[in-house]
Length: 421
Image (cartoon, rainbow, N blue to C red):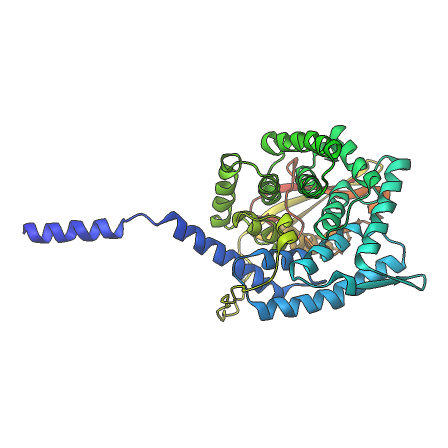
C-alpha cells in the first residue's frame, strides 16, 4: 500500500516538474523564427526588407530561403524604389531598410545602382541624396518630407554602412530630440525615439570628436529617459524599445522586464503581423539593427527547417456582432453606418461587408510593409503629402493594429477619422 502511494507521489512530482525557462524561451524563439520564415511563402505585395533583416540577425537560419528572398528584394523591391525615384517621390525609409537588409546578407552595396535623369549612382549615394532632401525640407518647413522615423532610419543605415553622416543632417535630428518633435498626432512617437537612439549610438561609436560625443550623449540620455518612462510604449513598439536599449549599452535590469512582457505577449498569440515579429525577434535574441554593422556571414547555422503544414480553412463564425462605423471627414462632417459581422472578422473584412451593403460607404486601400491601410473613404483621400491619414479607433481608443490585423470580437463603434499629423 505504502509502495503504491510512494510511486504515485513520485509520478505526480515528475509530471509537475517546472519547465526550464531557458528551454521554454529557446522554443519560443524557434517558433517565432519559423513563423517569420513561413511568412515569406504567404506574403502579399513587395518582399519585406524588415523581415529579411530579422531573419539574418537570428541565430537560426534557412540559408536557401534567405537567399531566395534576397533575390526578390533585389528584383521587386529594387524596381519599386527605382520607380519612386524616377517619379521624385520620397523613399528614404524603404531605401534605408533595403540597405540594412542587403548589408545583413553581407552583400556589396556598391553594386546596387539606381538611375535618375540618365545619371546612375549607387544605393548609398542615392540614400545620401534622399537625406539631403529631407534635411532641406526640415530647414524650410520644420519637418521632414516623410517623418522623423524614416529620417532616423536613414541616418542609421548610412552609419551602419560606414558612411559618415553629414553634420547638417544629424544636427536636424539632434534638434528634433531636444525640442521633442517626435510626435504622431498628439502622442509621443516612441518607435521614432528608439530608431534615433540606435542611429545616434552608431554615430557616437564611429565619430571620435569629443564635442560631437558630448552632444550625442545629451540626446541619447533624453531618448533613454523617454524609452524607460513613456506611457506610449505598447506591444507593437516594445521590440524597437528593447533594440534601442541594447544598442545603447543599457544594463540588463533596464530592459529585462520589457523582454518578459514581450515573451508573455508572444505566448498569448499577440503577434501575427510579420512586420511586428521582425522587430521583436532580434530584441528577444539580444540583438539590434546596429548588430548589422559587425556581421560577417561566416559559419552560420543552417538548421532551420519548416515542417509541412496542413492547409486549414477557417470558416466564418456563426455568431454575429453589431458594428457601428463612423466616418469623420477632414471638414468634421460625420456619417454613421451599421453592419452585423461574424465574430472574429478582421476590420478590413468588416468594412468589405459594409461596402457590399450599398449604403453609401466605400473605401480604397493601399499596401505597406505593415499590411493594408485605408487611403480613401467615401471618395475623400488622406494623403501623406498633405500630412493626413485615416485614424482608426474603437469606442474612442486608438487602434494599435491595422485594418487587416484588428479583430472584431464584440459589439463596438469604429471611428475612421481624416486626421492631420
